[in-house]
Structure formats: structure tokens, C-alpha cells
Amino acid sequence: MEAISRLVFTVASICLMALAGGLVAIAGVRVFRAAYSDGQFDNTLLDSIGFVVVGVAVFDVARYFLEEEVLRAHEMRNAVEARRSLTKFMSAIVIAVFLEALVTVFKVAKQSPEQLLYPALLLFGGTAMIVGLGVYQKLSVSVERESPAEPRKEKSETRRGAEDRE
Image (cartoon, rainbow, N blue to C red):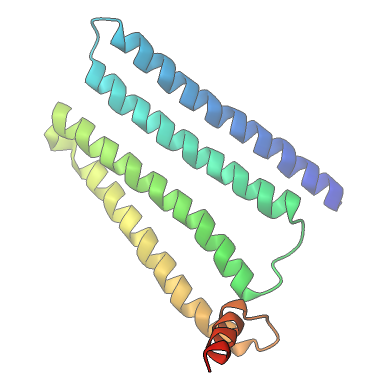
């Protein structure tokens, strides 16, 4: 069953990476075409930035699946590992949300300022995601402290550094 799961995650990751590459390629083609036509180049640039941001976010999700589900192929063994993994994943998503919100603010402000509620809500959502991640980080530290069986790399390195100085 694990082999099937790894195969499915591998195929899904490769498909997501290919689609992400397609989005980036489409963005490049659209910019190239707009540069050599009479069209609205600034709108095409903003749309292309959105495509690239979404493409990078999708690629990062695919990379996360590949690393965590295929290459590592084991359950999270401790709270530190789970926290780091989730933080990496959420950071990529939050960055994509903020970049998309920024692009949308510029686009909407130029075309129809009365529609600025959506990008403002997107910025608020990104901020809420960061706050939620911070709360998760803070709460997970207490779980890490309650599990003495877990390896505490940071503390052991800090202790070694202090012992070396003495």
C-alpha cells in the first residue's frame, strides 16, 4: 500500500510541476506577445506576474509533496519535525497569497477602485495566515518541551557552544 501511495504522490507531484511550468511559460509568451503588439502592456505584465506567482506556489506545493511523501516516506517522528515541515509549507502559501494580493491591488486600483474590497480581504487573509502560523509555532513549542524523548538539536548545539566557551 505504501508503494502505491508513493507512486501516486510522485505522479501528482510531477503533474503539478509540469502545470506550474506551463503557467510560467504562458506568462512569458503573453509578455513577449504584448511587447510586440499595440495591446495594453501594463495589464499583461500584471496578469503575467499573477501567473508566475501561482506557478511558483503550485511548484512549491508539488516539491513539498515530493520531499515529504515520496523521498522521506515516513511519518513525522516528532513535533519539531512536524513544525518545521508545516512552517515551510505554509510560508510558501502565505508568500503566494501576499504576492497575489499585491498584484491584484495594483490591477484593481488602476481599473476599478470601487472593487478594492477583494484585494483588501486577500491581504487580511494572508495576515490571518501569518498570525495563525505564529500561534501554531508558539503552541507547538510547549509540546516540544513536554516530549523529552525527542532530539532537541538546537538546544544540544547551544549547550555544546556554551561548554566550548567555558
